[in-house]
Image (cartoon, rainbow, N blue to C red; front, side):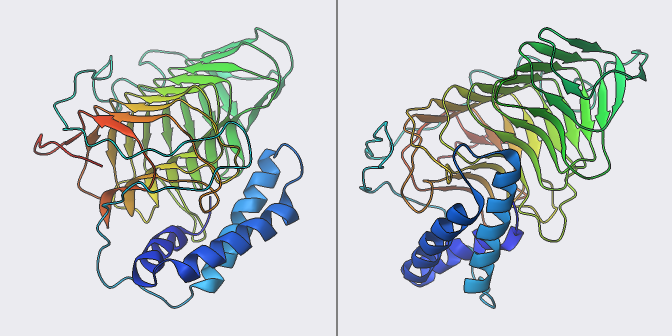
Length: 349
């Protein structure tokens, strides 16, 4: 996404002006940008164009406003209009669970330099195969790959490899008709590391990305991986993991997603602006999460039009580097076992 200041200023506007200016601007801009940039099933190019349009228009609407105090992230669930797209998401009161110590830590400990990326001792050779993969079952092993891999076939395997770019495009772009498993690999120097659906990424080291770590959609799993060292451009709205549409079967488990002290938006931005509403599930469990304006954002989409019905946020450890709070939530979630990493104190989103 784009415009690091927009999401923050939008929250401040909603708090200070009763949400009227922010809501009207968001609704008009989302509608105009959707008509201008997206037709049918949104492509990756159209989604980037939508991002740019939406945040540029919101920036113009709120130019000059600055937060004077840190907003307190204490959202409550409220009744919402029935989304026009099936399935219908019924909003219920936000569960008031008591956080306890995590019970399901990642299988390999906290992800970092010793347990993600290309295993020590692996000898890489230059990749000379096609960058667009159209043969089902292709295996790419122990390769040094320069530039984007476009996955347009089923069951592609990428392992023990390094994928690097020139600060443009996506490292591994899994297209609508493709699927991939990426393990023990390193992806860096792109705008985005991996997109969108039908992939599993395990023990992947993603760094030096300028727009987002990952853009995740349905049937996607990120596990035991390390997202760190963001390099957001001046117009970026950098999120470690971004979910921007209604999803099913999406899992974020056991990762270390660290925005550090860079000027980034969040570690997790879960907001289905592009719809449709879905039943989920979207599962966030056993992660280390830090940085951003709010470290975790869990929001409705397109100003209350779209929802992911089943979202669980459990057994995560939150850092202290966020600017305005560890979480910003305005939809019902299931939560338990979340703690502040430095103290072990229970944390409720």
